[in-house]
Image (cartoon, rainbow, N blue to C red; front, side):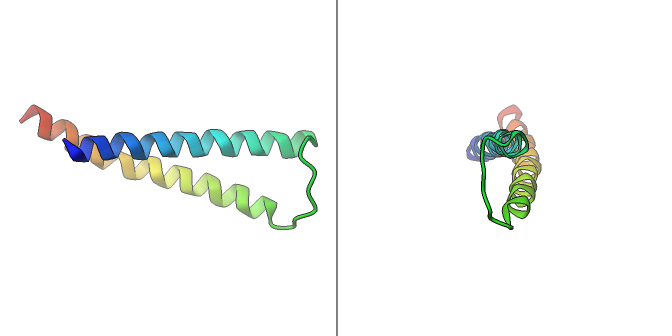
Length: 71
């Protein structure tokens, strides 16, 4: 049960991170967010990677939680 809840939280955090990363990328691309930071591209890429890892980590937790509920 707790594992399934953890999977839901991980998936939610992953999707939120991907949404925020997309929003930040669109702001940078359109010029609404102006910065002279040279590492902004790296931070967007790392954020995309973290979001994907959170979603991938949520999958086994969700499967284990569903398996625990069904048994």
